[in-house]
Length: 389
Image: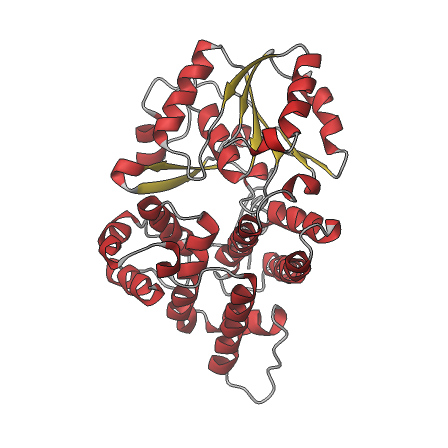
């Protein structure tokens, strides 16, 4: 039986090679003072920046820029952006980049008019905004996080060694529109593509490995996972295969636009582990997830054996004939491990620069979630991390 839920996703998507043509129409709906938010400058090298600046100027917008948003955006960068936005009386935010830039833009949207410290309010106390929310639009250049179609925003506090995500309840924090052109993702390095592929895949796992009912969401999740596996193999052979890249972009949006979580308790412990690893090491998000996944799933497998059996059969096409549930479940995880190695993902924390001296801080910074098949203790967290080394 599905749990009770409500569902609304107000983000309007424009998808395809000509998607940016819709930006002009969308800009007419919002104020004249626009904050253009972007990362390290790759959009200037590939021409996207010039194209967007041209559209903004043609629309008569006054543009202030918040550049240099890093892969794990920090609270200090957020404070900097708040000051720029307030000084320029920003009434619309246009995020151009990947998930970190989009997360940052959403955090900025609830912080510009906030009269408290946004870290304390949103990331320590997990409160909802009581202030005016500045609307956000997105031009996506890297896929994986699904941030283009949800209300989540992850921010890092380096000195505290904390990386915290807040999924806001107010749908106004979701991007009002997102422009998705698969070609924009093709100029990025293969390592970033691969990290994004695992991020989207694990988003689905976090929602799939929970609950024991016959849930429609699980059938959707299995189809999405199969699609990602199939398209990832094509994209690895040819990073410019438009069909594969477009399918990955579309799957990433559906993996975390809250649809497949409906009626589910959801897990999210791999993300809690990975985010804490990222706070202590600044490693790439998708790689932090891949490095801790297998030991975590091996730990919880006995408590959700039926779902792991289903995962093996329905996602990895493993025949159940003559096998015990345990054998099937283990074969499913082995198939996932082989695919991860095929993509070149990190399967050990040591591969992404984590040392045993960091473990105490990672354990301390790991939030415990209660929606999965086993509620971890801090000792369990330590065991998973040590198994991941």
